Length: 478
Ligand code: ADP
Picture: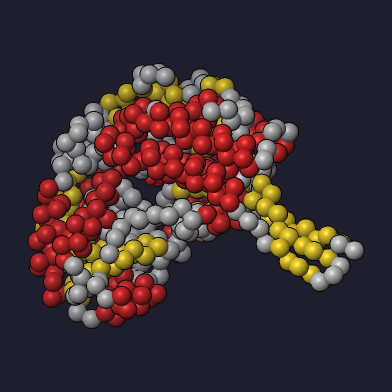
């Protein structure tokens, strides 16, 4: 497939255009011009994909293969992804402005590693046994759940798409994947590689389209068994309500408004360098970002000088240039949204230390001091390269500010004291805490968070619990 062709659905192992033949423009956010089109899915397309997945699950070999056979196919898929690294990386760079060098260095390797991890996790997983005295013996069997609807976001299309599908596939489910309409290409390429790797037809299906048009056909179908969603909180609510229609279990990985706490004993250089990554990576289009920076007054000036210098050093530009650290925002909608928040700064009492809109849909890394902690800039998810900075003088105040949010995905703490690190981590109301680091991952660890950040956790055994039907088997032994 060249970039000027229509990105098709992939259903039952076949490339397919939309039921009605309609297409959507696929816009490159750097040139702001369409670089191709994508099939505009319909409810009929969704139904075809669900039926294909249903047949693959109910009658096909995938859920019946042993762990080694399924794992081998997933490892082969990871090999093929590594072979096609450039093509996959270019797809995300063109669709949503991810800098190519970052996609090559981070996104594709991490995406491939997800299939390897869940293939191995499946192999190495044990299950509980319950010795029951002389007459009975019991154990838990983790049976695949069935057909999984995986709805994925546009900010890291390949990496987060893979995160939604690797575990359910490993555990023997079949999948209908609905990538975001702004970034459809890498999901199609991935499904085509799965086909090449020998995954049976119908096990991984991809349907494109506008979320509000095709989403409900997927989430309200009686023929699906799980919904896994990553996206915005508003859409997550709709997805949760739709899944509730048929009592289908759902996990929702939604927004974040992470706090970055820089305590008075922090290594200021490490804190500034890491915070710059925590707030500006992927132009701030990251739900895990630590965008509310809360820094002790005694080191505030030294820290901010460094942070501003790091922000200014980041090069915003053409995603395909090796010089580029940050691409444009992913779409016009996203650019206008971030500009809308930037326009609130004066009203909310803030001062711009650096940053602001550039040409096109590009936006310079922005650091804003002094905004109202209960204002929109500090409470709503901006999903752009804007960090707010607040000062504090005692630790209780800092923790209170950090927890002053409806979200609860992540928090970052900089301190050289082990004891303080443990105390603060325990007091932060969020699903992931990073101490003196950022975005370190282990696929065994839970991902998710309370409040407006969603429902449920995925990762390692958490994914197993969700994507299987744990079954208790009792056997008479005498
Ligand atoms: P944003 O608001 O930033 O565009 P969304 O959370 O709406 O992000 O998008 C995440 C994913 O959810 C995308 O794949 C999108 O197409 C999909 N989506 C949007 N609306 C719905 C819906 N009503 N039901 C199911 N999926 C939806």
